[in-house]
Image (tube, rainbow, N blue to C red; front, side, top):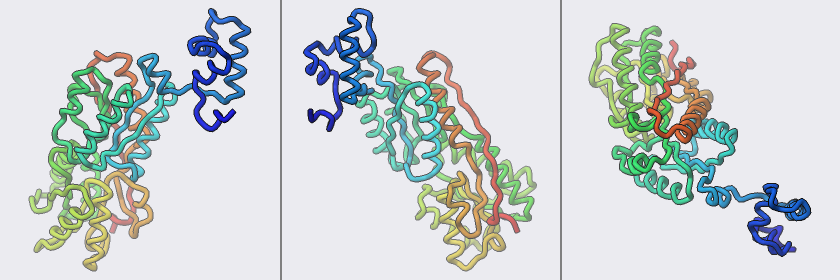
Length: 339
């Protein structure tokens, strides 16, 4: 029989035994209405033909696919892959599968990802917003239709949707305080787009950190970029061309910090002697660049786990008030910020 080359279905088993599909299905589930003799025959053949249930088909029959859609801005960085692992860990415990899509930081692709995942009949979504996402109609439709939804890191609609974030204000304060303790006075911050919660909160932490350190806020040292390498390089260049340049810079994420590092070096400046540098998210490359990059590290696996737990809580208690889990970060100090 050539059926071993493709997925064996209930129909294949039924045809082989000359019984109905429903009889095969019930026999596989040891239904009491099916005689022990038929049950043995069905289960024996299923084993011989390497039959395994199709989770999607089984889910559609029960109106529950046991699949969760996960949308992230990219699939390359360790930050998101570790969070996905955390989600998957909890999902597996619950007997669920995950389907992953990337928005590639595009609102258009994010909207398409939502549509495509819902077409595959996922039971709900766990999402980190793209950097372009300023409108939320595609998520409002899910909310209005009572489809389970959880946001993490970059979030919106927190009054209606559970979410997991880190304490961004505290993290940015840690960085500013660290710079100050190491004798840096002109601390610059390269923020992201204004509409992103992570950018707003890290800016707030930067400003309160300056105040706590007794340092004056200088508007020319707070700049924004779209978080791309190109734009981060451009704003770093502008900072370094100021009549009195900053002696310390931190970026909204490590992509921005790596771009800043490259531009600082291109101009013949030394890190940290001339300009100290700190990143945010602590990607693997932080440990292999020269000098090694001081960075805020996130509890990424835990973020994923908490997002999945909130998702299942939503399924079990759809009318419960949405909560936001706030996790702590850690400043990992390396050579780029210590004189």
